[in-house]
Image 1 (cartoon, rainbow, N blue to C red):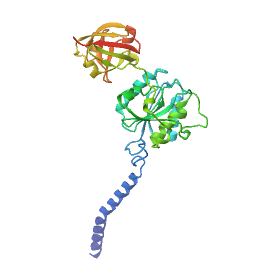
Image 2 (image 1 turned 45 degrees about the horizontal axis):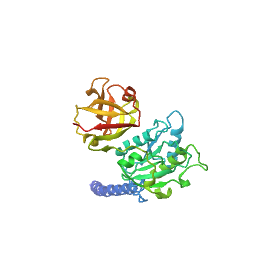
Image 3 (image 1 turned 60 degrees about the horizontal axis):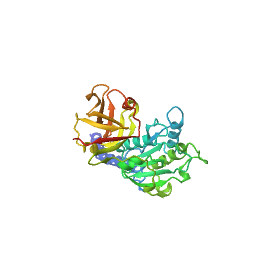
Length: 324
């Protein structure tokens, strides 16, 4: 009987102690998590590496192709600076030397990535010359590590650029002697990783005036009493659809409705084509106008290449009158 009483008393003491033990364990876990670099608050001049719930992300784009080791080397440099960084390859098949294509792809992806994302872009026909290597911060809070050669033109138009710095700090680069032809490895990749790690971007180099950025000479879209004037800026990959710099909103100001025939002058050729929702809304082989997945006016041929069929290559002029 005495043994049973002692056992019952001990059981009650153990039972009453359990909540305290559980609470203690929870507090220890929270204290441990608060020290995690992924959850720590980073106050270093708006650096992207801290204060985030998820691992920092670098979005990487080049015209290197994937037949050799160049992309893998750049990945290795990034991981060496910050092993936990997440690297997403936008594309490495940009048309060689095409700053315009790089600018277009860059502007197309920024809306889908959060503030703090670091974009490393190497389309750099002027590598080794007097062109500047820069870091820019957009008004969306994203960072861009790239040559100052016009790659930021469309991002600036859509998102705005609030600050720019020239990359001069050799501590953020790799190697005792920089290559004159592989700044993707020696400058842009390590700088991108330092930013993702949360290092103070104010130390990367001196501040530049945003107005001093190099910009592509693209004819701005104009809409007036006569109609719309714009530019074909690219073709849509292997399909040959024409990509324009005309937002859907600007085109719709002309007063056309879907299903209506639209007179168009493109690349010096006068044409008429229907404004429709999608390619199959016209017979196979017929041209059409549509709003593409990026919200811009596009020109296509159902199941064929507009560029090849009509001999239009970007950049090319585009003019559309107002609807009557």
